[in-house]
Length: 458
Image 1 (cartoon, rainbow, N blue to C red):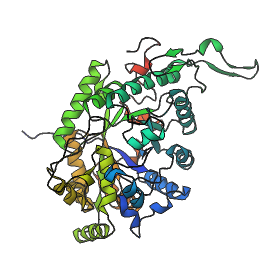
Image 2 (cartoon, rainbow, N blue to C red):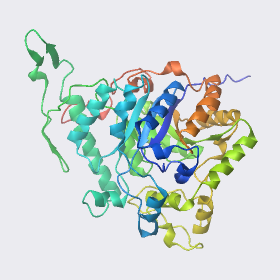
Image 3 (cartoon, helix red, strand yellow):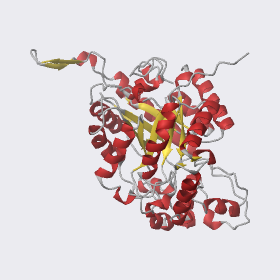
Image 4 (cartoon, helix red, strand yellow):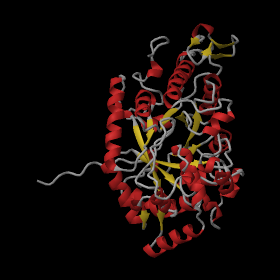
């Protein structure tokens, strides 16, 4: 009996960026490449160009990662990171997004904001404003931060323990939910010119939140925006991170590229979400996609060789040391790699010794995946197979040179993905949440904790 192929579902297509010169998602020092324009990252035109390419190519999301400190674990200082430009200069993406939104129509924008160094009242106001002026094209990547230098920058001295940061994040979310979803009723805004009534005070209320970390009276200062709550993104892959994602996240960024690990991790998150009373099937998953492509295999290899000639390992290792919390510069070549500290993010220890790690980071493709290096046909087939086997809902393109990697992807790979039904520009909808949900709603579903009445949240 011939098996009917599974129906192909268009993927959520996203671009991963950071408002910096040395983007840590690919190869930090490729800003040295003559075709890379990251030295123009402080100019608006640089970002407008990328947003236009992304929208014209059928991308759904322009996503900004962010950091609030210098990577100063490697060698016990920030020297390697500063000299190589590791995620520096860290411009504020929230100041860039409004300009990009003004020059696009369908492209949505995600921004990383830490719950550890922000106050929920001002944060809720800022994101409600963004959601209004983008017509509902805004998402929030919820992080608790991991850099020791960030803690020092905000007067904490030492980084808060991992689980303590998540406990604060839980309460932070509770406060913002009350402000976004409960402070103003749907019919509160009257806009009654004749009788001089802007809003009905009976339908606007204080939230009177008093908790361990925050005391916020309210009411929210901004009227309900198209999505009310921005789309909620989370990238935690630790046990506590998965628990947090299960409770709050609508989109998860995956902490692995291994198909079996992805399937297992997503199953964990979705099962935990069901225990929270949520429909776990509505949680979407996006994987990072570092791509190198060319029309022929020879062109691909020439590109890799070119990238390698401008690549430096130390700034990349400085970033990796900050992510893992391990000072690799202090280890001898034959030393076994220690486990990442419990207060920081997990690290990928495919290597057993420091020598093996350094050998890996001597290559510009240290973070690349062989599946996604090759001709357009090969890469598109690999994306299709990866999506099918892992169960992901979409990807975030990570660039090696910018905007060259995006331009190559748009010119060579997007047509192949369209041919396979994996990108469908006509499927884009706004607000952003309506693109993600099966029911096409712009609002959070009733089973999300944000929609529970005041005082009824755990």
